[in-house]
Amino acid sequence: MIIRRAEEKDMDGMNRLLTQVLLIHHHGRPDLFQGGQKKKYTDEQLRKIIHDDNTPILTAVDEQGEVLGYAFCVFKQYVNDNILTDIKTLYIDDLCVDEKIRGQKIGKLLYEEVLRYAREAGCYNVTLNVWSCNEPAMRFYEKCGLKPQKVGMEVIL
Image (tube, rainbow, N blue to C red; front, top):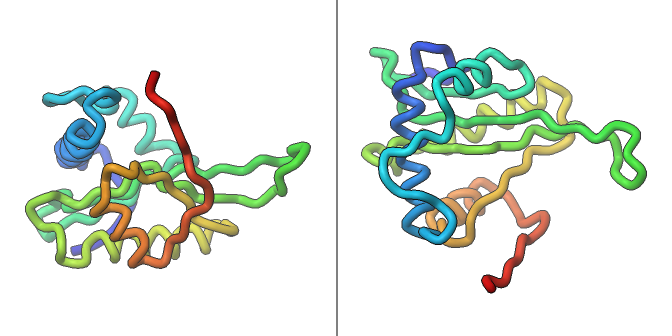
């Protein structure tokens, strides 16, 4: 297995995993997330993300080039903000390992590569959001050493 920047040839594999993530969210919050075989991005949107250095996607692929997992990332920085410092952050928008091969440390290796990538890019921190209904993901991130930074709250009317 290798971890590298995503390429257009990875799109089918990434779309397959994006659907898996959507279904996890749909099962946890069907009031917010649609079910079925929806796609988070059109192929055109995904191509644009792949080629944008501000939104790097790291993919774990096997020897045949099959996508095993990915980490969609976004660089964020608030320069000259009234209250925030100018730190550079790498935000993990989405991290997924194929449900058929979870538990083989691929997610941990992807996360460690995100950290390396962020350090090389001069980032101060790595952040992400996780839905509270996705308890396995919360446990995974806690095992990786992440701690809550802020908590989103809601009331359903």
